[in-house]
Image 1: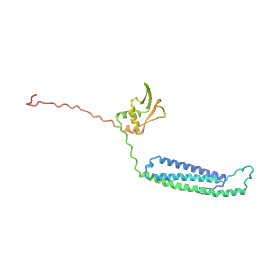
Image 2 (image 1 turned 120 degrees about the horizontal axis):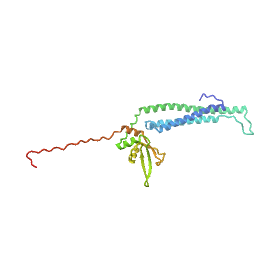
Image 3 (image 1 turned 45 degrees about the vertical axis):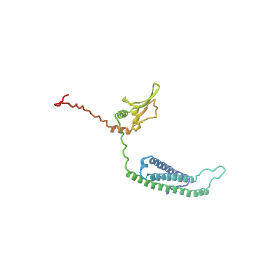
Image 4 (image 1 turned 90 degrees about the horizontal axis):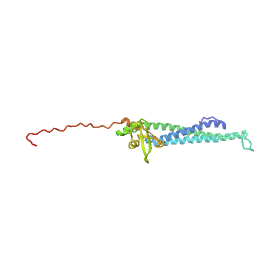
Length: 252
């Protein structure tokens, strides 16, 4: 950018415009990365606050570079017809206008280039810092798999086949909420609510209950099905009663 060669007027506008558009795109990209990091688990990493503040400074610097490029375009002298009754600029006046504009434009272009240099260096160090922080941070322990009883397992297994729906029907003047499974398994509302409360199911609330809301088994629900172990039943063996034997010398 410091080596940009241009002639004031249309040529300068054509050459600076792509730089401004690219700077705006870089600003938007940096801002998007800042939002993504702020919404991620990175915020739990030691030292992440400094990283977020550094990235926000990069956003500010890129925005200032955009402003400098826009100022350069604003300082650029344009050739156009004057108002009625005013004479057109002659070569001497035009040269004077160009001579006054060029130093201002160069100053803004130099400031924009400086902001980009600082931002590039900051991005390099920030990326290195984030990689180092994530590498030294122990991974989060896996979430415990939900334990299911036999009734819950049967219901979840049935709903995992797909096409399960939660719907509401009127019966004898009352509204009853029911669960319909593809294979016809009877699932009580209490069982359904217990599964949903633990995050094993999701419901598509975009449709009304009267039409039927689709039920989906979540990833946690699938893990619970895989890890399920049926309740062990204790086998009972009849123990014969002890036989009584007569004791000599004792009368009944």
